[in-house]
Image 1 (cartoon, rainbow, N blue to C red):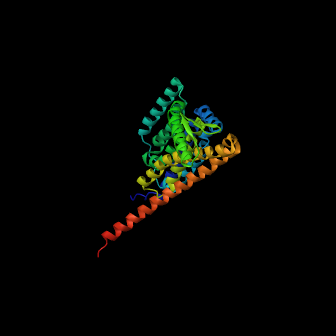
Image 2: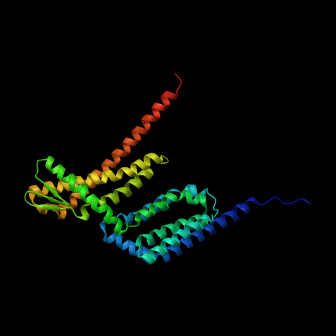
Image 3: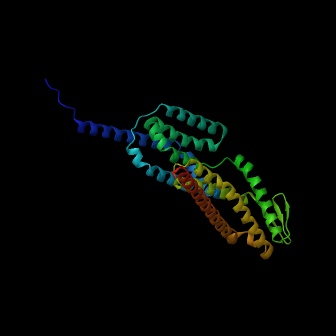
Length: 304
C-alpha cells in the first residue's frame, strides 16, 4: 500500500500556531514579571520625575521598545528554542532582589527587573532571540538611577574639576578669581559649585544620547561605537566647565542673580546643545577616519 505524502501546508500551519502560542506565553510571562516588580517600577518612575539627574529615564523604555521593534525582521526568521541558561540569569535576578530587599538597595532591586526580563527571554525564546534583543534589553540598565553612595563619589571630583577649570578660564580672561575647595571667590561675590552643578546630570543624559547615537552610527563597528560612547565623558566634563566659567563671567559683570533662575537654565540648554554638536563632530571624525583608512588600504591592495 502506498503512503500518502505529508501535508506540508498543515505542518506549516501547525508550526505557525505553535509559534504564536509560544509568543503569547512569553508575553504573558513578561507581563506577570512586570506586575511582580510593579512597586519597584513605580518608585523608579517617581525618581525620574523628581530628580532632574535621571529625567532621561523617561525616554529609556520607549527607545528600548523602538530598538526591539527594529529587530522584528530578524525575529520573524528566528526559531524559538528555549535555553536553560536563562534559568541562570533568572537566578542572578533573584540574588539581586534578595540583596536589594535585605540591604535596602534600590539599584539592585531595579536591576533585578532587567535581569528577570533577560532571563525570561533566554529561557523561553532561546539563545538566538536573546542575542538579537540583547542591546534593547541591556539598554534598559540606563534607566536605573545610580546609588547615592556612588553619586557622592563621582559628583564631588566633578565639582572640583569644574570649579578648577572655571577659575583658570576666568583668570585667563583677566577676571580675578580664587578657588577654595568648590567655592569660587570673585571680586564682588562668590559662587558655590554645588552637586547640581557637578555635571552629573549632563553626563548621564549625554551618555544615554551617546549610546543611542552609537546604535545608529556605523552599526557593527564596535570599536568606533565604543569610542563614541566613551567620548561623551570628557565632552560632558568640558562642557560643564564651560558652563561654570560662563556663570562666573556673568556673575562678575552683572551680579550673582545671573547665576540662578532662567538665565542659569538657559545656559544649561546652550551648553547641552554644544555637547551635542561636539558629539556629532566626534562621530563625523570617526567616520572620516574609517573611510580614509578603508580607501588607503584598498589602494595599497589594488594591483598597480
